[in-house]
Each structure stands twice: as C-alpha cells, then as structure tokens.
Image (cartoon, rainbow, N blue to C red; front, side):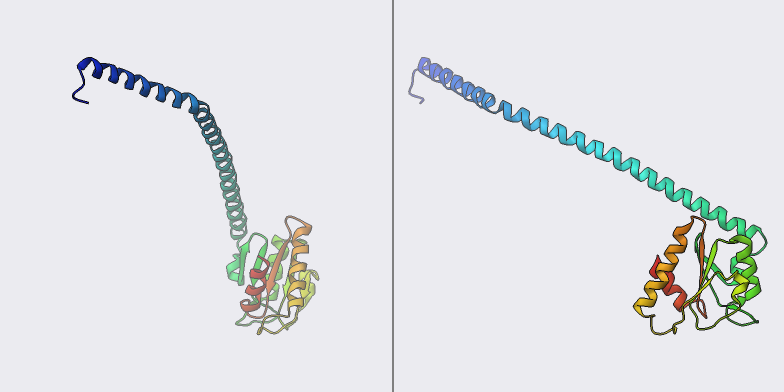
Length: 205
C-alpha cells in the first residue's frame, strides 16, 4: 500500500470512498421502506396505548367517584339514625353496610345477650318500616308480631356449620329480599349475634 505512488493512493481512496458511499446508499434504499413501516407501527402502537391509558384513567375516575358517593351516602344514613336519638350500638346492632344489619338475639326479657325485643322492633319499625326482614338463625323463638311477621326462621346449631342445603336456602332468601327493592334491608341474628350471624353475612357478601 505505502509503495504506491500518491496518485494511485488518491485514486484508490476515491474509488473506495465512492464504493462505501454507494453501499451505504443502497443499504438505506433497500431498508428505507422497512424502517418507515416499523416507525409507523411504533407510532400506531403508541397512539393505541395512549388511548387505552385515557380510557383507564376515566374508568378509575368513575370508580373513585362511585366509592366517594357510597361513602357519603353511608355516612349520611348512619348520621340520620344516630341523630334520631337512638344509636344502633346501644341496641347491640351493627350496620355491616346500609342494607345488612348484624344484631344480637331480640330477647323478650332482660338478658346479657342481645337487647330487649321491644327496643329492637321499635328501632326497625321506625327506620325501616315495611322494608326489613329479620333472619332468625337461633334455635329460639319470640313474638314475631313485634316485627310485623317479617321474620324468617332457620334453626341449626351454632356448631358445626349449617348443612349446605340450609346455607343455600338462607343466602337465596336474603338475596331475593334485597333484590326486591333498593331500600330493603335484612337484620340477621343468632343467639349470641356472633358465630352463625357472622358466618351467614360473610357467606352472602
């Protein structure tokens, strides 16, 4: 290479450079369409992802709005009950949500379990008149007329769990009542207001 005259070197360099430029030009021309197609695909995918992100953001906003409204409604509902002068807690009653109530046994006489029958019936007839159904899961009975005969009895021992058929019957009855009207509520109790009550409510939810 170094023994060549400068003219030859210049000619060789010029020829090599021209060949290199031609190779690069041919490479670009051969792949220009493919590169353009890839760029178009990337741009299209990016636009699709951006649109999906917008839709997802709107849905999240709607969900949060729904949660906020539900929380506000629940707060207003409980506040209305408390402001009426009688707290559900004083009666051994707990609102699991605005349509499901867990409570102790409505005892016809003073007892360490539940609360006096008259007090509970007065509360339900005041706040949910004609819109409640009591589910008695205990093996004990009381005067159902206090609840306008709106009582369904399912007798089974606290331990073990109820037979599957009985469980299904209870859950189906609860769902039918709650589905009948948006403001219908259920009040569920056993004897202690704990084991069987919690089991049925958890199974329904």
